[in-house]
Length: 243
Image (tube, rainbow, N blue to C red; front, top):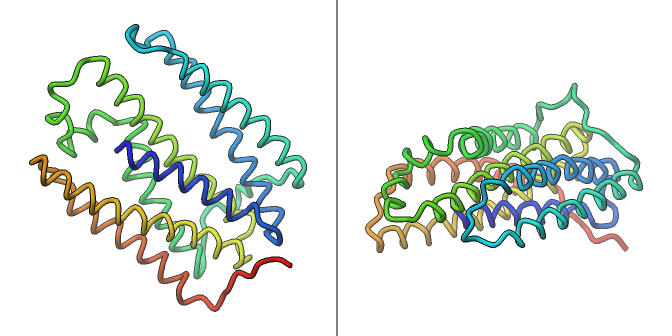
């Protein structure tokens, strides 16, 4: 699950890289900056709230660093949002449609229902479902606390990334260059995730860890990524470098 958090961070970076290039829709870039503000604010508030319960055996310097770092990201995102036109998501167009929109909507639903919301609100139930509770039986309370915190932050990343994609779709529902870039980011990181999943499965086999959700999770996520991938590879679109 820690690796999945890293993959979600990679997806955040993929979005930023895709929309930092010249020739990209200014409106899409502006909304991406805007969505980064509440995303990082959520992490700042969470870190502040967790400080009183932080295990005494673990140093708090990392938390303080994160608070400063994410606050800096909030300021930079706000400045970028204002400079790029201060565009806001269109609340009347939050359901993507069309050749790229529908696959992205399916991806967003899978992200939110399968991972985002359960990791934020129902971590204990989700860990039971994946049989992780038995794997963690010998861990100390401090280690379990740290794992629970990381899992919660992973859920936040899922929700924040999904919200950013939906928000960009809402302001550019017919701009195929923008939708293609979003879909390409989903597919690129998605294929990396599936490859990593295979590695995790082999490690679990070697550790004799029985994950009852392994097959279902792989088939479901693979189908979603293939659906988005089909929209990308069949679209007569090529992204050219701006001269």
